[in-house]
Image 1 (cartoon, helix red, strand yellow):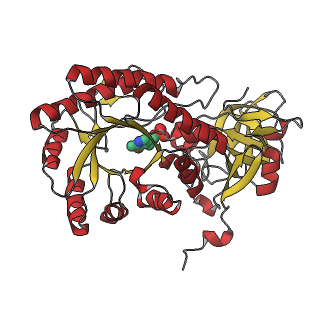
Image 2 (cartoon, rainbow, N blue to C red):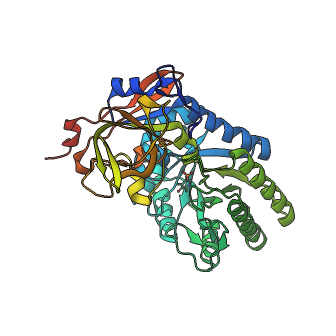
Image 3 (cartoon, protein in one colour):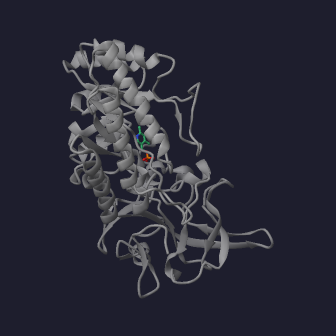
Length: 432
Ligand SMILES: *Cc1c(COP(=O)(O)O)cnc(C)c1O
């Protein structure tokens, strides 16, 4: 009935998430409100963990891409499930460190890390630094030497796979700001340099081909391209690449019409390809990493709003305005992302209307969605937007000086605050 498995309707006709009544949550914590279901986060972590073990064995680890939803509580939960973590800024690193995350299981990403960020990552001893470009390699070498450390690095590689089209194509010319290009020889030259570096150890290679990808073929293709490169490095430079990170980007169900493959199928198919290619290329099986973000966090979360104005423009559309918008839900204005919405206090009723849910920010494009099937919504109703657990809180802003909403975690019907709602004084905290 609903797009995420953790949503249901209780005897009052109210939408529930993880057993908690969303109308009660809205009353207790106010709106807008981000709600995350701890049990579904854990279940998603376990499914990834179990499938990597089942299909690839012990030489594999799942890293949660924390940019999807980063706060200390999220770090604690994924850490307790045994996952590693990806961070792409000093802020995400700091959040994980303060949450007590095992830093040896953190991969540090980014296409333009600052010296401050590199120095911090080296000083806390992150597991891997994923080096994006040659100037970063040089800066990292200097920083590692200054600290008397020898960090493990991976190289971010552009495998030349275009995953945005359904029939993926190998791109001749790679246009991306991330990573070293393979076919120009840039990546090979960088590897040649890194294998003789005194102050860093080249441990692995990394690729990430995109996000919200439904098709498994491009992942298989990327794995093949990367393994061929590992074989070339072994054959020509006599150097063994030990780790291969295949990135994240697994598609999730935002609408009932979406039909992503289960992670298990992805893991099975990609594992088979890796094993077969290693045999064919005569290289040993690398330690494999995958980095799901959205697929762990998104289905576990919803955002709750209170309806204010209802504006019917005859023969054009009906606007339902809510007490948040692009500041807490930026994905529509960014990429016209679609979501399912439910009037939480009328969750048993039919969706009889198609409406535009609008935010309260001063931008005409500030919408939660258009043409959304919805129960008849009036002022005071609570609207739940589903599958918002990824890239909503983490992309939120203070546009129009809106206060960022609270994040609440629910667990079997019980709720607790993970991030407090910002106060008006938080809004002016850094103003002088
Ligand atoms: C964003 C990102 C991910 C996670 O992508 P999802 O679509 O959220 O699974 C993984 N790895 C890297 C390097 C990324 O940039």
